[in-house]
Amino acid sequence: ESRLSVPAEGLLPVQAGIASCLNAFKVNGAAVSFDLKTVLAMKPEQRAKWLNKACRSVEEKSASANQLYDVVSSKKIANGVAGKVGQQMLRTLLDHMAIFSEKQQRFLRQESPLVAQFGNAAPVTTAKVVSKPDDDAALRMEEMMARCRTFVRENASSYEERQQKCAEEERQRLAKLEEQEREEAAQRQHEAELWQRSLDIWERAQMTAMDLRAQEHAQKTKADGKAVENGSALALYQHLQISHGVKSSHGDQRGLSVVGGVDVHQLRHHARHLDMDRVTDLLNLL
Image 1 (cartoon, rainbow, N blue to C red):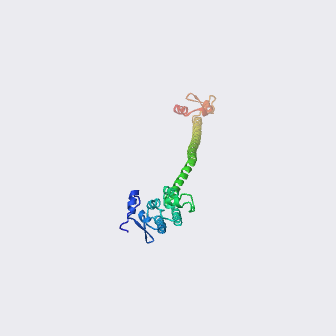
Image 2 (image 1 turned 30 degrees about the vertical axis):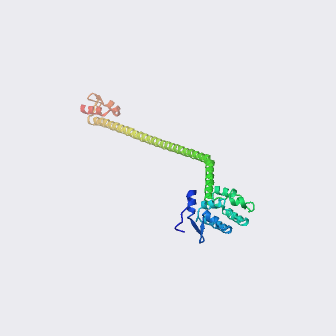
Image 3 (image 1 turned 30 degrees about the horizontal axis):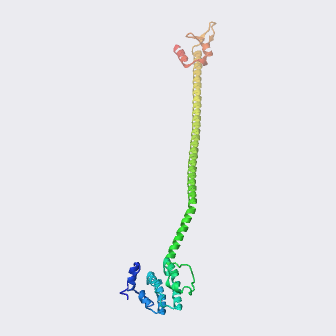
């Protein structure tokens, strides 16, 4: 059986029908055949047991749902089946409806021979189409993607608003930094101007003090020079008076009154107003 087994997944319906003649799947050690002629040759009770095993083999991925669908959708599947066995087969088929696709489920519930023949007598527990696990996963994924798209649409405007708000806050921050830099630069410039002004005032004060000291020194020097001149003129007068004394016209011994045409009394009177050049001239004259 393992050597003759041919995979039926992905085959076309005609190919699946040909392969089903060779395929035999085992459920709990028992071979399950999906050949329509083999199934139809079974007795009604054996056919009911076969259907149960076939459904479980499809659930366990040991067989293809298409192979089982080809058998149970056949018009001859209910031939020779009594009411009780037929109802049992219909309940088994309805209990394992999830192994079929949605399109196959609709056909089996509405138009299959088992439903047509035993549907009125068999209680249908649910009218909802049961989806396969893969279909359920795809449906959940689609619902999740729909919620994501809705979330994105609802929050698109708020995202743009937050983006604009962030841009405005960044612009204000940069403007504040620029204003702060300008204020700091102005403060530094003001401090530099104050420092330069203080330096200028200090320099002017130093220059004024130096000028005052220079003027005082010049005045002192001038005063000292005049004192020397006055002292020299007075010393000259005393020297003339002592060393060159002459008699007066009355015969008295008096001080020198005229020397070289210079009135000594006048010299004494103006001694403090003579400069050194005048004194030098007098000395040369004597």
